[in-house]
Amino acid sequence: MNVNPIQLFDVESSTFTYILVADDERTAVIIDPVERHWERDLLHLRRLDLTLAYVLETHAHADHVTSAGRLRELTGARAAVPSGCGIAPAEVQLNDGDIIRFGANDAIAVLHTPGHTAGSVSYVWRGNVFSGDTLLIDGCGRTDFQSGSATALYDSIVGKLFALPDANRMWPGHDYKGQSVSTIGWEKRHNARVANRSREEFVAIMGALNLPKPKLIDIAVPANQNLGLPHGA
Image (cartoon, rainbow, N blue to C red; front, top):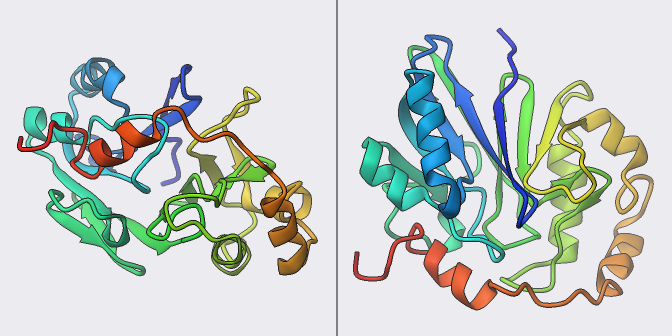
């Protein structure tokens, strides 16, 4: 069975949240939920009569606060996060090659894809890959903060994500041009930052971006390392 995820969007940060539904159609996981939309996301789950099993994070975000902690409290779901991101309150610390099982017989594979942050991961599910801020449509995440590394990002994209089948659909963590989904094959051939470039060329491109600091980074990162909850909660 190969179905589309439920894709939800936050206009303010151009951030995607995804709900994946298991074969039994009663169990779900949510990826990278945003704090200001927790009520919307909970409404989707209730409308579809879904039991939330896991809240997954691809990394500790710098541009928005997660609702992982709130959704966990309201639904009884478990929080599963990359082990290298310093999100200590989560029940499950994920490493490369781990398998997240949910529903009767559904599974999500974890790929450690560092570069945007040192701990970033991507999730592979039924011919889909959820790449967070590692690989974007015709672009990629920045590498100039949170232990980012252009060299590591290149290796993650080319060595891990581009090793997936070309037909795999790629769902990014952000998009700023109204696009929602691509394929691994398209990105391998056309991605403006990565396709047909050497590691050295890619590192030079990333080093010349000179992007402004995310406005919320000093608030968002500490909050997200506590699953979006007030410290001490």
